[in-house]
Structure formats: C-alpha cells, structure tokens
Image (cartoon, rainbow, N blue to C red; front, side):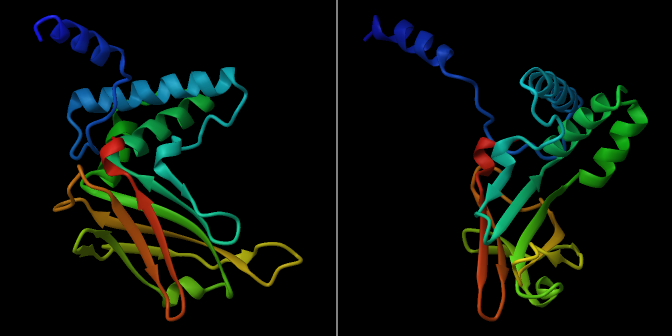
Length: 197
C-alpha cells in the first residue's frame, strides 16, 4: 500500500484541475483568476481564429435549433467574458470597469435564454424558476424582449430573455436547472454548477 500512495499522488497530479464549484462573492484572488482566464481564452481563440467573445462551453446549454440556447453568467464567467471583450477592442480593464461588472454580477446567477416559440411575446406568459432539488427560486429580475421571426420560411419566433436569480441558498456543489413553464410546454436548461466557477 505504501508503494501505491506515491503513484496515486502522481496520477492525481496529472489529472486536469477542475473547478470544485461555482465561486460566489469572488475574492480578490478569484477576480484576478477570472481576468487571467479571460486573457488566456482570448489569446487561444485568436490563435484558433474563432470568436473571442463567447462564453466557455460549460456555461452554455444548447437544446437544438427547434428549442434554443441558454447562457449562464456567474460572477466568474461574467468577469472573464468582459475581460475578453476589452481585449478584443485593444484595452485592459481598469479597477472601475471590474467593479462595475462585479456590482452587477455579485450574489447572483443570470441566465440569458434565446428560445423559439409561436409568438413574439410567448415568454411573457411563462412561469420561470431556477430549480435545485426540491428548491425553486423565482427570478428577482426578468427582462423579456420581443422576438423576431426565426426565418422567412418559419412561423416560429426567436425570443431572448434574461433572468437574474440570487445565488444565496443555492448549493454551488449541485446542478441547477432553469425551468420555463408554459401552459402546454416546458423547457429545461440544466447547468452543472460543480464543474463551473
């Protein structure tokens, strides 16, 4: 057994580090980590000639072209994304810029959805909650926009909305699902909080 311990430690060191859970109320070190992550992913995107201002894939749930997508903004992902956007225009974030992003994101999880439905305003009639186990958290803020035709050949409309939920009481070590509940349809966007920051 003593011979196995060093081998186990070496093998664990070779496993890529994974976030233990979503970070809430970022510390100064975590703020620096978010900005560094934004910088690193910006440089990688430029090298690979792909869009530099997209969220990391783990923060995106795509249910396909007939349903839509959802994008999760944690304090970390919001700050990393903003750092990428500043780099895209050739600027570095100043402390006042960082504080502006943090003031908006602190203590919340925000989900931007872009979903397809029958009318331009169909999401206004949906009930929305962030669900974790038996716990249902209603948004403290909802911004639902009027949609537009998905295509000329389709009657469906693509409707964007942003739902902001307090992170207080949400377990960062357990998955959450944004549930959009209509009279005849339910849309569920699951997010793996333990694998994100």
